[in-house]
Image (cartoon, rainbow, N blue to C red; front, side, top):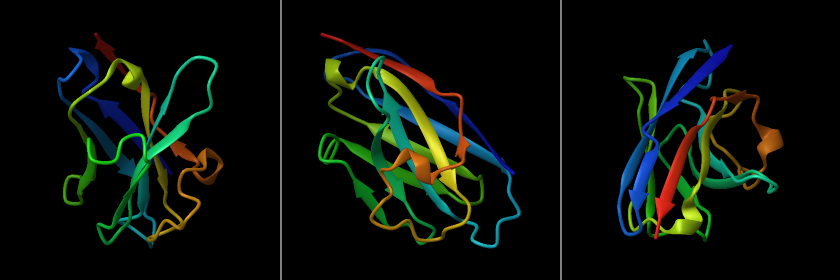
Length: 129
């Protein structure tokens, strides 16, 4: 069983930067390091897949964050990161990390929340104009 804990959220002004972290514990998955993804959600909206990284370090991004957000991982520390720059007020949301320990590669359906069964508790990011 994988447990995920996010940190690093906060309040920043537009144009600012933040780095989110997500530390994993547990697992024992044969696919470790496995597929991991960052999502965000605002009230009344569906959870949005933002950035994914597979076990080989390959990444993909949603168009809404491409060029501004960078996902990375430190396998030795079992930690996933999301570096966010040029933040905009519309980036305000609760940010979640998710893991799919059954996959080393993530597949084209990586933005689908239903793919993942391990979730962190979320960390709030607020961007003011």
